[in-house]
Image (tube, rainbow, N blue to C red; front, side):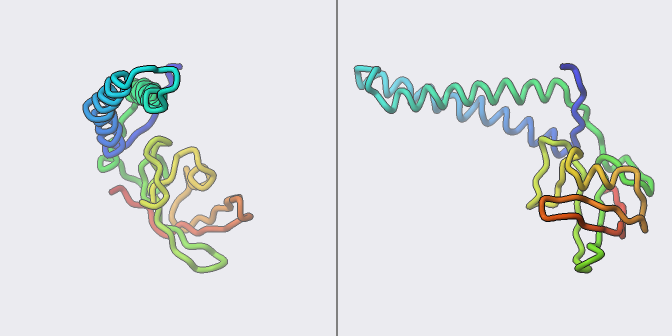
Length: 158
């Protein structure tokens, strides 16, 4: 797969930081845990050894996954974008037409999506509905809780 994966500059920093943490903190820690468990003797019944080996497998798999992601990353510098239509990187303020509740989301890559921080994945149903729309447009989004209508109040590039 050579598909490019869109990331914001902040998403790239987060990705690089996780790879660094896994390689410089987690990897040495699990190697020490394996060495300690080996020192306890019989490995066939050594739960610490098996847990440490399992953790090592997870860490190595995650490093490979993140390095692959990094190699395919296409960094999009959001602050250099502009325009009135919603696209990757935009921060969109919406109002729910039924409840008048406002919400603000930034459309980001799958890896950096974090709803608690208001970052939604480009592949999420709401982001897909918003792409290409402008202020004043209404979008219908089918969510697990049913269909919702949102009006786009503001499109920003932060």
